[in-house]
Length: 374
Image (tube, rainbow, N blue to C red; front, side):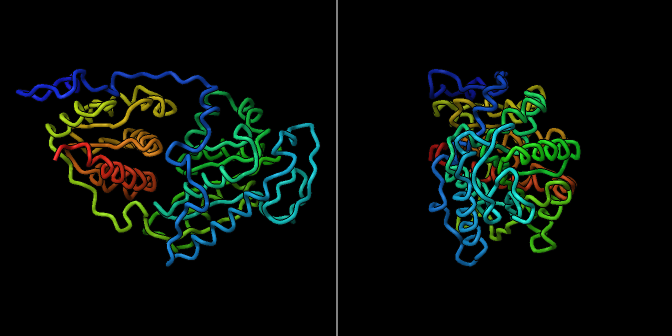
């Protein structure tokens, strides 16, 4: 494979060739999918007090206060395993954050939905909520919308309900409205979990150009999950993308030679040409993209091109999310990452995903600058 050869006319810097993602075909057992429903490595150490609100955006400070109250309201019997189907639970339904299974509707929403643009820290806050909730890690679940649908696909609907019903909290990052079938599936799942006493928290993105226009994401979210709308309190979080706040622009793409030499010089790096990697992603289920990056310390890509179609683009978005979660820097040659998606894609129904991928890949490209010898 071309990604495992040295630069012509030069000796490889490392004794062994870089890894190739295209050579990996991971198999992920269902129990691993459940066990890995925790905040990703990037958010292992985040807490409410490590979130730095923009002083010009009071909604960020307000969100921290509300979520901190939310977390402290999630203690009690259910956090120790009570509240599963057929058991009784003690505690009252004080305030909108109390989640007694038989709470009266008047007690208010049972969950919180964080609505905001890209890079305002919604995932940081969602992970902080997970960490702050007074329950054992095995009684809290954290995953993206895609990972949740993958879990249902692996376990089946009924088994997923049984697996998560004893949880105190389910956090869903990047709730998506793109696929009506998946939205209905997850809506049904969440309805069952709410009936079992599980508290919910979710995030989604508002398109930057739509900020302030009717709370687009929140309105769509609440409409699409019809029966669950009364369980969520939308929290608006305004602000600019922190990944670009006060930082230089993303580095320009490097040459094929620079990328290849960096891959050989970096222990644990992978090296693939971009078109081949896109082809490989079509043969690996997206639920395995996280496992695909196990042990990878840097991803080096040559010949980055515009993605050819929507299906390919959506697979790339999932990979970008998993790389970002794991803080894997990405060094690339070819087109810059803001040229990956066509204007038609960026103006279409999946645009929020593509903007998120551009933002995250740009951050990872910035992280990779140190891999190139100066």
